[in-house]
Image (cartoon, rainbow, N blue to C red; front, side):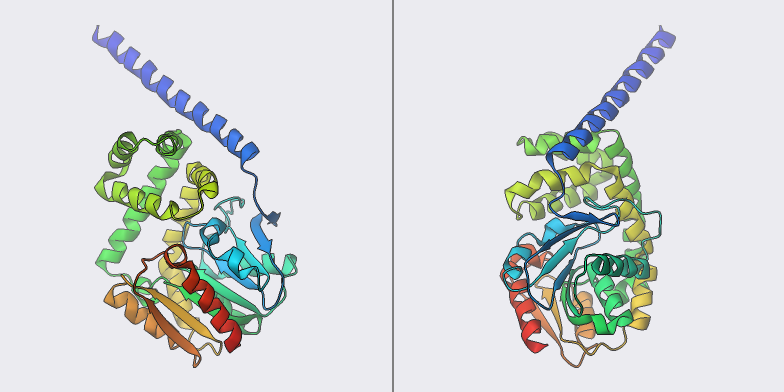
Length: 334
């Protein structure tokens, strides 16, 4: 009886796993049909280009975010300038890349895409969080191609260039959760949980998140869901689709793994930037983060720091008007 029970359990588990894989494959095919990219693919990178006018404004998203994170800002700026938001390789609608996600590779990929799309230089770079490393690296390497910078609560460069014990623990946990998330996405678990959320269920998705990644993982999931709900409802299905794709978790892991080396590289090369530079710092930034924002603002003689008291880390979702105003400010300053 014990042997029969074991065999039965194996068959049940295999059946559940197979059902999850099929569920994922069907969902992926449905997403490809119903959620085409709003922009176009340029050498494997999805770019959403809108508006007319110079200098062009290029939007760079956070570490695992996509072009959709700028949906509350890009339309407003497109009324006065050409705008470009895009998905880095492995994220959103963009194809995967086998190259490490080091900052200079990311800079080169962005530059190649802009050149192929015939986006005129110089350009204003607007970057959120991790994207700030790419924007600063771009300005350091290709100064003549950058008209101005707007950094939206950028990641702490000095904090991650030499990560302490807490930061090292965060990196290890982020990499582990990314690996686990990729596996769960392949098995359809992520898609199942997000489908329940979209249907209005709360309890089961929370239990899945806690069972798969613990309390901190569940808290992160709830926090991200809260940020996503600030975006227009029509983009929710696309964001859900992206987070159901295993490549998203793999790309996030690769970005996290490269973060310290990328921060050290930018810290070394971006020593002085003679361009209009605005750093928007979230009201809930820590003292260390605020100090790093001040240091970044001082990289340029035309740099300034603006604290946004009624905003969290995702300033472009909490206060899109502030981000638009900052872009207009550097346009006038240039």
